[in-house]
Structures are given as C-alpha cells and as structure tokens.
Image 1 (cartoon, rainbow, N blue to C red):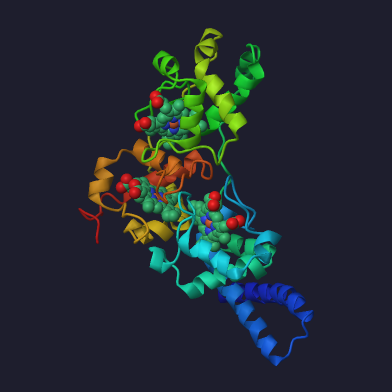
Image 2 (image 1 turned 180 degrees about the horizontal axis):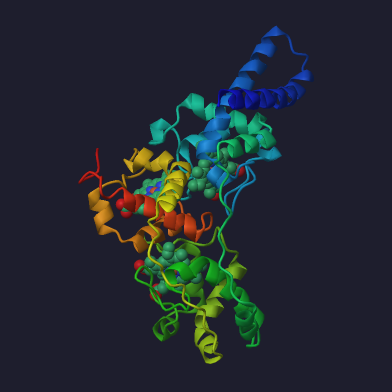
Length: 354
Ligand code: HEC
Ligand code: HEC
Ligand code: HEC
C-alpha cells in the first residue's frame, strides 16, 4: 500500500514539476519563487485526492466533463482569475447541481481545501489526475442509455415528418420514459403524456415552455440546459402526435421493474458507489451532513419504496442540489444503491440523528 502510494507520488511529482517548472522557467525563478513553486506542487498533490473523491463523478476522471457537466480541463479556466474559480466552488451555481462546497455555505471544504482544488484545475496535469482517480477506483461508470430497436424507429420514420418524430422518440426514450412511462402512459411518479386532454388544452408553445422550464418544486426538471429548442420542438411534436404512433402499431416494450437484487455482491457494489457518489453530501453510512438529509433512518426507509428510491436517485430533486444520476449511473448501479440503502433498514435508527 505504502509503496504503491509512494510510486504514484514519485510519478506525480515528476509530471507536476515538469509542468509547473515550465510555467516558472520563463520568469527566472529565484529562491523565493522556488518556494512558491514547491507550495503549488504540494497544493496540487493535496487537491487531487479531493478532486478524485468529490468532483470526478460529475466532471470526469480527467476533467473532461460528463453528460451536461462542463469540462474543467481547458485553457479558459487555466487563464481565469483563481479567485473567481474559488468562488464558484465555494458558493456553487444556484439552480444547478453544482453545489456550494464551502463550510460557510453548508459545504464540506475549508478555504484552504478549495484553493487546493483551484490548483488542480489550473496547474495539474490531467493525465496524472486521471491516473490517481483510477488508482483510487473512482473512475465514474459509463453513462446508461436506452436503445430503441431499428424496427421501431423505421416504422416511426415512415410516418409524415417521420424523421422529426423519430428524433423526438429517441430523446423521449432516453430522458423522459423513466418517469412518464415507455409509451407516455404515465407512472406513479409522473403524469400521462399520451392524453387527449393534454393535447386539447395545450398548444405547442405551452408544452415547449413546460419542458424547457420544468415545474419548480416537482420532479419535472427544466430541460433547456440539456436539450436545444429544436430538440424540445421534436419532443413536442411527438407528444402531440402520439396517437399516430399507436395507429401505426408502434409500441415500446415496457421495462418490467424487477425486484431489487439484495445479494451481498449487489449491496457491496451499492456501498462502493455510495461512498463514491453520495457520501460527500449524505455522509458516511448516510447519517446525513449539513448538505443533505440522512437516508439511514426508519422514517425514510419505511415510507419510501424501492421503486421510489430508484426514481429519486435517477431523477434527482429539481430545485435542490440533489443531482439526477440517471444519465451517469446504469440501472444496475442505481439498483445496487437502492439495495445498499435498503440493507441499512434493519439497523437504522428510528429517526435521523441530528
Ligand atoms: C453533481 C455534479 C457535480 C459535482 C459533484 C461537482 N460539480 Fe462542478 N459543476 C457541475 C455543473 C452542472 C456545473 C455547471 C453549472 C452551470 O451550469 O453554471 C459545474 C460547474 C463547475 C465549475 C465552473 C466551470 C466553468 O466553466 O465555469 C467549476 C470550477 C466546478 N464546477 C468545480 C467543481 C469542483 C472543484 C468540484 C468538486 C469539489 C465539483 N465541481 C463538483 C456539476 C458538479
Ligand atoms: C424525474 C421524473 C420526470 C422526468 C425525467 C420527466 N418528467 Fe415531465 N413531469 C414529471 C412530473 C412529476 C410532472 C408533473 C408536474 C406537476 O406536478 O405539475 C411532469 C409534467 C410534465 C408535463 C406537463 C404535463 C401536464 O399534464 O401538464 C410535460 C409536458 C412533461 N412533463 C414532459 C416531459 C418531457 C418531454 C420529459 C423529457 C424531456 C420529461 N417530462 C421528463 C416528471 C418527470
Ligand atoms: C451535492 C449533494 C448531493 C449528492 C452528491 C447526493 N445527494 Fe441525495 N440529496 C441531496 C439533497 C440536498 C437532498 C434533499 C432534497 C430535498 O430537499 O428534497 C437529497 C435527497 C436524496 C434522497 C431523498 C431523501 C428524502 O428524504 O426524500 C435520496 C434517496 C437521495 N438523495 C439519494 C442519493 C444518492 C443515492 C446519491 C448518490 C448516488 C445522492 N443522493 C447524492 C444532496 C445530494
């Protein structure tokens, strides 16, 4: 363990010194500057572990950005004033899943730790960061996608404006079906969208507005950050013309909700994912932190079905910092997380510890 750690530190130090020295060489380093450089290297080394444990899950092992989360490995951020970046990390971005990380803002990091994270963003070699994230076993899993069969898409394409409808259906299958049902029939957590009523009372503009802006305080998030207005228009056309799909015999197989696998392997995977993606907010063993409520208590676990836990994890809670994990974690990962949380029920305290 120790040797592996030291090997890595050696490798990292070499890469970093090369990078940071390259910056400094141009400025004829004197003794004082050398000390400043050493400090920056130390800062990066300390920051990389914080990055691996708290940021890689959204921003990627090499800072490349995942899904709709922006990349951090770019010249724009390297050139930016360090203070500005520190502020973003400290205060988060209101109304997005980018949480406020400073202890003063209800987060978990001191100012010094935030400065270390800024050093990573501005000075680190991202290959070294990715290697460290990988060594810690924290490389985020591949994003999950829903695939429609070619046959289904072909029958949709044969309808008038079929190409647009098919695009809309692909977006729907990936982003909306989990809540609104495979065939827009609605589920216990989201209303039916294949409805004569909805079509009669909503114009295209009404639907586009709801989809773009969401319904605050409900699980219906606004999609304007994720989907272009053209893509939203495609989904709107799909919602308006769903009966034609039905007449053409297009049916999307409903994914049966299998009972959650409670095997020791599934629970162990869930525990590992939890410490990777959730513990920084919900706390170790999910006893809660100032950033997020405890999940490890009878009140929550008794009131919330496995399906509901899975949906909350996949969809997040809009208007709060609870991220939507559906695009980042596979169904199996979400089921494993559900199994892990369920496994706590036997020993969970009756109510959340303060
Ligand atoms: C749950 C996902 C998530 C996590 C975890 C996360 N971020 Fe972010 N971060 C985002 C999103 C989404 C944005 C873009 C917000 C916006 O649209 O303004 C963002 C934006 C940023 C930005 C601004 C980027 C820019 O180009 O302006 C910085 C810097 C940043 N994050 C750093 C971090 C650091 C450091 C950590 C770890 C302590 C972290 N983030 C953890 C999702 C996340
Ligand atoms: C996490 C679950 C979830 C996801 C994912 C989701 N929705 Fe919703 N949606 C809801 C809920 C809940 C409501 C009801 C909100 C309310 O109470 O007004 C809703 C409402 C709607 C409405 C208004 C329906 C009405 O009867 O007024 C439309 C339109 C809609 N969603 C479209 C979409 C589209 C298109 C997508 C995919 C891009 C999508 N939704 C993804 C949960 C979701
Ligand atoms: C950036 C911080 C953050 C991260 C990371 C995070 N959560 Fe959350 N989570 C929250 C907040 C805040 C809430 C409360 C939202 C609200 O006010 O309803 C929450 C709520 C929840 C709830 C619903 C609790 C309830 O009482 O209804 C579940 C379940 C949950 N989170 C699971 C997870 C899982 C599993 C992960 C990891 C995959 C995770 N969370 C990662 C912040 C976070």
